[in-house]
Image (cartoon, rainbow over all chains, first blue to last red; front, top):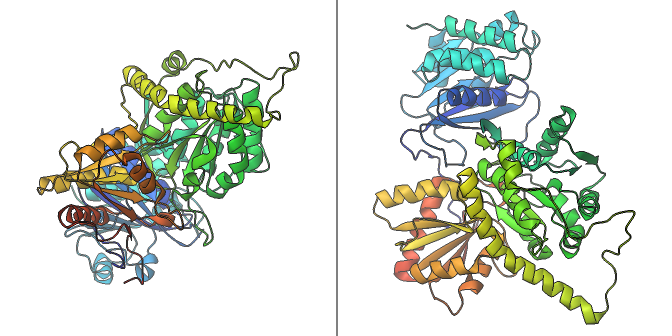
Length: 200
Length: 390
């Protein structure tokens, strides 16, 4: 075992645990998003955990955060290497970070981007993908600045629709209770992004 | 009762709040800082009636707690890693002066090389300071242990300080659902601190003075006796706590050990992950178990003798190292079982400086200790996944 190389990359144990990985840049709210999603699922009676990548964070640098959702108490404490879902808050990360690394077979990627979906799918190499222009929605709701919009609430609204994992009402309640600032604006952005994603 | 999704650090702060700590000494250090920040919020919002003392170092934080505790105030502070190292002198003072100061230590590696991630070396290096030391494996336990530590520490036949240990980031910065007990329930369960002797301006008394060799040893014996007595007191408080709050704790948390062929001993958050691994391996037909080392001081030697008489192979996973010897927890377990039973004991060193311990890594260690049971010890100490070693 000594000298056995890097840790393996699977974590899934309990059959019902759902693992979500967020990719953003420092300042966009990826860590807060992981917490808001956990709070939303918690409101629906789920067991949850949310945590940042245990790294060094700074504004503008790539940031990773995680949420686990399960029907049973969550005992696993290691990081997430094989997510069921990936949420990308910053479209520029697609060029620098392998956002689909370890994604489970059939796993869903939700991306903040205004580019054509086909193009994004080719770039990431994932077929199951949803794109939403969370940047535009955040700007419309005056979240952050034009140059550095805070897109986390919008992307969560889109995720609720695309994944069906949590109800939009739970996401909005979670935002209204737990968002650190501009609660109403953030809830509005989540609603708009939810509506912007196609599907029934 | 309120159930909230909070970090381990917030759980620490809530623990100090509902224990009604009267004096909080605060000095920041990563990854502890959000504990004292949360407490500052409580005080600023008027939710907590406490003397919040901002100090210039961890050494001063403990000095402030010592002085306040000496006047009869319930005191709390929090630190991590190098902060705990700087406190070392005053940790020994607190126990020598028989002051029930309670503290959260966020377990973090010591530098260099610099690291802010999970590692037990900081706490292990305080083994001999006369503090009770309890490792949590989830955020609920962080909060609950603060309440239980006050209850034990303030007993007049104990009067010793205690620290709850929470792994850096893995607990300190991870949000989980935590029950915050009702204040009324806590008030009824944990009466105000009422020491036999206290520092009072109108009633002069000497504390911590020089003693001649004829008496020094006798004072130390009293500390030793109190720490030994804290074992029974902890067990009693565990029971009381379960009756009032409905959550059960023990000195060692035995998980599927009764009939096990091999057991891993783990302290801290990795033990939580290991329970999932035990369940999976049991489904696959491997008779394995987990002994989660919860209370490290006072050391639960009887529990490990019980284990050693039942289980032929025990792997002890240390998240720290005693240079020139081995893992400190493995060494203590081996010493505790000597002349009582002779299982094979192998020491695994893992997760230093926050290296992630995944279920797969634990699975490999379980398969290795099962192999030890079949074939005997291949070596006494193994460092897990060290690079560049044959």
